[in-house]
Length: 185
Length: 211
Image 1 (tube, chains in turn cyan, orange):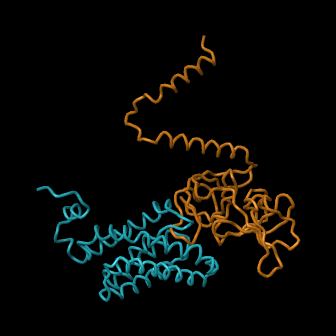
Image 2 (cartoon, one colour):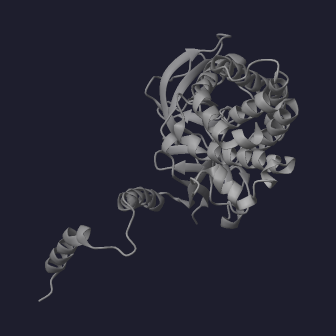
Image 3 (cartoon, one colour):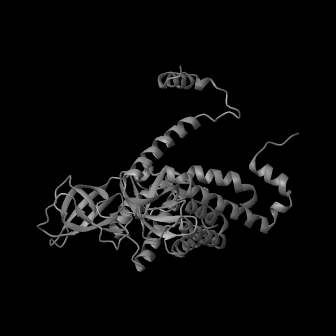
């Protein structure tokens, strides 16, 4: 019987079932997901700006992988995602990388200690992670006189971005689970 | 006899028939409307370029800052087109920003909305001088004396005190609100930029004055 054409089946057919199970292949898939989210962040999501903020797809990927794969993967994905942000935006090199690495690491610390499938918990976690990454970025930027006053940033950037991100938790986590569930989780 | 009127009539007939032509390969839906829109925008840009007494380099917007913290654009012109860091970027509506980073094939534009941007400016009506600084969706004209002659609705233009990169008289925006800064010594005016930053697709870089 012919298999349905899904991304998983296509990848399995292209690379072989056994190859997808080894660790190098998992890292390759994670790298592909980070790159794809970086491309989407720089292109499609620019058109989804509401009240001056856009959703942070890379942060959602970092939280998802940190929550289900642990602090090492969380920190690694956070570093790579943040570095891509640094390279494609006009911020100083390393500011986003450092803040997202810390967020990915801290989210990863709770892996296995809580029931990560609970949607309310996932929403709360993304809200906290968005606040944390933006405040860390703000503090690091303030060292280099890059950031606006905290009150301005908190009201106009950080809180709206956190609210926007939690609205996307369910669809993005569902897509991530569909794409990666069988190989990564 | 072929007259100008008969040629126009023939062209009009052809134009009327045009939608029935079968393109090969077929044109995707919406493509022609997109071309027409682009044509209108480029004509406006060209008309402005002809009327402006500076050498301008047209560029397309190819990217925006992926983060929420900064307001920058990427354009498809770089040092290979003869442009340099700090040159002014405009549209027919007004000032957009300055070039903060120039590579051979692309450049990054720091928009006047960005908190790192500051432009020497003056009130067109009263010639009062100040500095327009970026602030999220609006700009603020700061360092105005307590007796400064400035009103809501005044137009703000560049003052030209930018080391030669920003010509004098480029429109920045319109004053929407005036307030005292916290110390009470100076005034600050909220300036709404004239350029539509969310819809920018083509911009012009001011290279130098025409000889």
